[in-house]
Length: 241
Ligand SMILES: Nc1ncnc2c1ncn2[C@@H]1O[C@H](COP(=O)(O)OP(=O)(O)OP(=O)(O)O)[C@@H](O)[C@H]1O
Image (cartoon, rainbow, N blue to C red; front, top):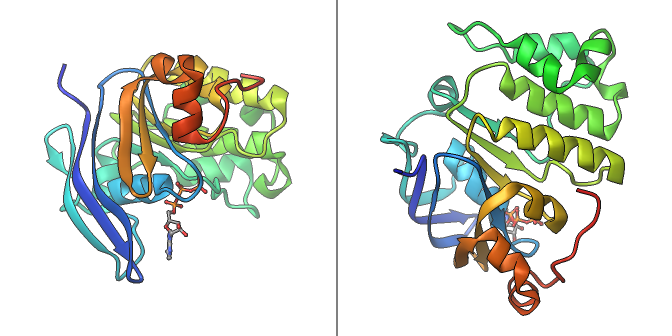
């Protein structure tokens, strides 16, 4: 099966810092690929480069293809309209708007919004349609951030640390939702909670200091404690997925 995403020799310099230094990896067209690594290795920078959101003035080189489309030469709004979904780390919900208004703003032109799909995955969003997003819990905001992207059909989802800062029970809920999502659409997932990675990911790509340090089966990485510790600096156990 051809990869849905190919990142080839990607380099990103921001403010004189060479943050990504020739990153190369692929993402399979089904299931979850985890993008892993210690803090500050360039995971978020990689996702942002794919979606075309590197800061102004950044120097980006290499090639990124989503299917056959060159991402680096396509503006972000066209990538999104073409089916690239991005759930950023900071969730970016509009705090002063209601849940319903946040969802409405995310409808993509020319495509019927799939409210049924979103509310089936996250019934809480339907119940709280009139609540201001800023008053939702962290987990509910995360569900809104994911739900927003799922209003449209996607060919690839990029999801950045969806369980960060969430209570254990909510981590489980978000992991369950992503598991269901990944049955329909391939996901490139940045995630620090290795129990979540173990549950969701088939493939893993590990970054270290702006380069790919390891690629392979997630189960293999997490099944070898020495390897996990060497690459990620932590044991392979995690909780609450
Ligand atoms: N706009 C920017 N200006 C300057 N440095 C930046 C900028 N964006 C990222 N960096 C630096 O690039 C490096 C990689 O950052 P990035 O957020 O991609 O790492 P990460 O692997 O996602 O980290 P974490 O796991 O902590 O979220 C860090 O050293 C960060 O400080």
